[in-house]
Image 1 (tube, helix red, strand yellow):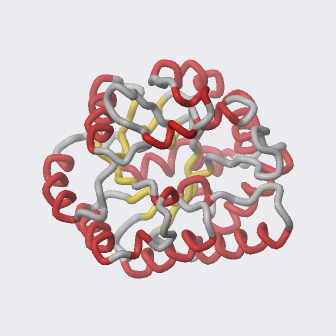
Image 2: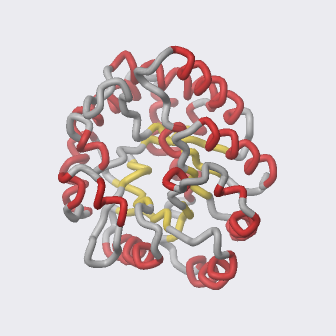
Image 3: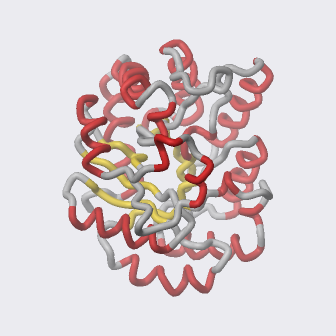
Length: 281
């Protein structure tokens, strides 16, 4: 299995300012070895590291880790989309690095939900499109999902990877669920968007893992919107540790995927990530 969404952080190398307000167990450094120790019992053999800091220092760190560890197949790294000149300057060297497989920003942490639609940001997105690498996109609000539709229609040659299925509202009133499901279906109709089944947490019981029934409902909606060949599996470790522990969150996720037909399970666990991120190519 390829974990398509693994985080690490080393606070001696990058700031990770958001961790100052995070639960205490997340504030410590989290290493590659610790991640695999937690995830390998569930069949995780390889992983893609994913950006967690708005800093080029972390970009350098992730690529160093990938170069040093054969279990790591690539890194989705930070580039400042709002500074297209910096993006243009950094991309040529990144393109020469075999570990570079995509770009991500912490879009969901911006005070302005429309930040990604800014003029400079759109220039930055255009540069990522021209470079031919995917852009991971984080959405926690309906507005974020609406903006993804706008971007995907504007940048048709760019592969967007919707992280965490756009934060399905597991637990709140049915109206929130229906809106998310409708938006997911609209996004699934865009051929240049794929999605990660990762980071699925309850909103009605903070700190609790989703139930098998809730995960089945989320997965059914994702399959209906995208199909298995456009879905990737990710642990969201170590963020997952604050939701009843990584063991609980992974068990529910892995069991739900294992119950699918073998061809669909293979796509989620290995095939889609390999194709989308060009792993091993």
